[in-house]
Amino acid sequence: PEVCVIGLGYIGLPTAAIIARANCPVTGIDVSQHVVDTINRGEIHIEEVDLDGLVHGVVQRRMLKASTQIVPADVFVIAVPTPFEKDGHHTPDTSYVMAAATEVAGVLKKGDAIILESTSPVGTTEAMRDLIHGLRPDLKMPGLTSDIADVSISYCPERVLPGKILEELTHNDRSIGGITPRCARKALAFYKRFVRGTCVTTDARSAEMTKLVENAYRDVNIAFANELSMISDSMGLDVWEVIKLANRHPRVNILQPGPGVGGHCIAVDPYFIIHGAPDHSPLIRTGRQVNDAKMHHVIAQAKSLVADNPGVKVACLGLAFKANIDDFRESPARFVAASLAREFGARVQVVEPYAGELPREFDGTGAALIDLDTALENCGILIVLVDHDVFRVVPAEERSHALVYDTRGIWPDAKITPAGASLRLAS
Ligand code: SAJ
Image 1 (tube, rainbow, N blue to C red):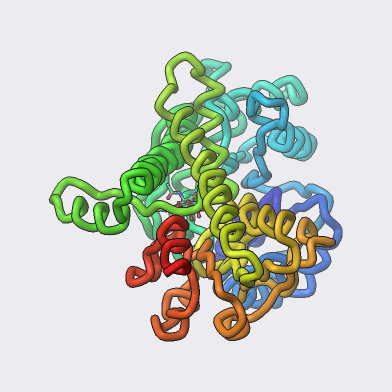
Image 2 (cartoon, rainbow, N blue to C red):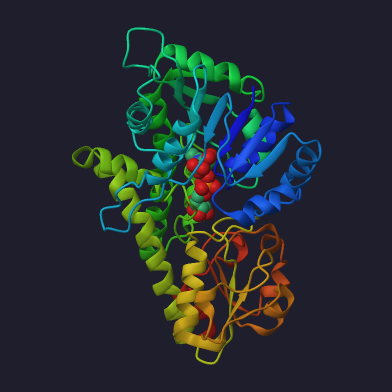
């Protein structure tokens, strides 16, 4: 089939490239002319392991091209962002999905399949169907007619991990939710072309909820670890030791505390559930609050460590939202480092091997981006915010001179809380 992938971001572009590799001609649609031009040159505008080679290859073979204009196709895959509104209520914003569906409606023909991949509140796929129904009364829509529908509409979320997107797009199992079972079967046949994991069919609403539940589950579990870290701090206990020991229980598997939860998924998707069922989601809501509070706890602790040691240079290690990637979106590390830079100015340095320059919020603070060796030589306070492998392997003797605040537990020999660190300096 001819395929049209709408939205060429972190999910859409790798998906388009993998479909193209499976020998389906793909047109990728994006609102950004820059993105379209970059891809048509065989280059990419995002960083992801092995994506550049793959995109270059499929563009050269003319299996993938990009455009700002929608084109007719047999299968439409929608992978546009679904943020939430900054209205204080975290209301899900599905306007990009509906705008994409409106575009698709303009070129839709009998026999086509539409697949929504964007993380979406429960009911979005049906709302999209209703919108298209209004725009194209000439086509019979699934779930609204007892006849066989003219088009199929499904919800098939991705569940890939940034940094492993290509591998996980191919090998992860997938939930495929049709508005009707017939829609699901049609989408299943499409995914079987390029997915090696097991594809399980269900209804669209269950598939929508499944995606949200996966990320809410992880958020709540990280919140448990973060809450433990704050409890342990207050009791003078080493949380990493406690978790390591507890995880020896055959049915306990506690995640790792950190400086908060970042990225575009785990810190967002739980709100889609909370918004859909506000009276029945106290645990999920509290999980979000705990993870946000953890970041403010880290800021407060880091600030008191820096304030208690006047004149000592500070290195913040890491800005990315998690280890070994160059993604700085919604990153607690970045927020903590910027907050320190605003308060302590040029005393604060940042080490981020994955960044070429500091983000804009550091402008005017006096903070500088330095390399790891310089930080180890010049800084008497090291604040570990990201567990990049390059930080993890720094030997103890290279950092033994420094006060360490390790929010990720990467240096088990230097697990010193700010209180402990001040004590050590004083002695
Ligand atoms: N984190 C911790 N402690 C942990 C694990 C993670 O503090 O033990 C933090 C990370 O540092 C990061 C945040 O949580 O700030 C999220 O990182 P992550 O690796 O848990 O997840 P993402 O955002 O990279 O990708 C998630 C994945 N979802 C799940 O694991 C349930 C991925 O499979 C989804 O496809 C992706 O969200 C998405 O797009 O929805």
